[in-house]
Length: 177
Image 1 (tube, rainbow, N blue to C red):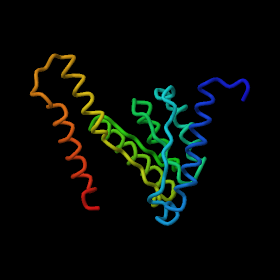
Image 2 (spheres, helix red, strand yellow):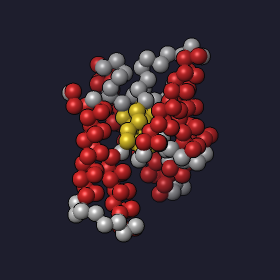
Image 3 (cartoon, rainbow, N blue to C red):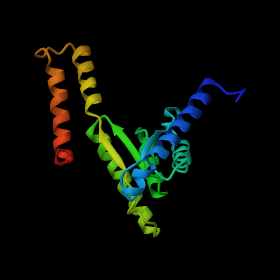
Image 4 (cartoon, helix red, strand yellow):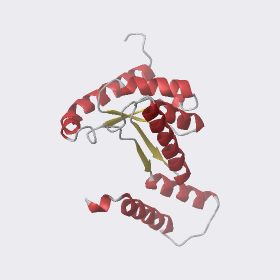
């Protein structure tokens, strides 16, 4: 790659690491019949406002390994692309900051799965993921407290983060493991 830029090299390494990770997780993927054992690779953030670029890169990444899951951006173009690539059979992963983002992603996934089923395609092994990133929400709360000069009890943002994380953990059902 003598003509490659630093970004080209970084993406090549990113892809190679994801492929190697997919190979390492393949025994789990096979044992769990495709319901576990996936690895995520993230779309280039520079594409996040262009549905076609996001969808094309997602489909390319999906084709790299059977157990590849594609982490998608969530500006409006990303939500539209999530529906499109889900309809094409791409397993998506999104880590959002807000409940509204999570709802937008969930609705896009549902529309994509519905479209896929209407075309007679199987969705039984698709495992789309949307996670509310409680840590990011807590970080944003700290920024707002500082920017707006909001006076709180010392440690309140950390307590808020802990409560969000605990609620997400509890309502996700993960406490049953």
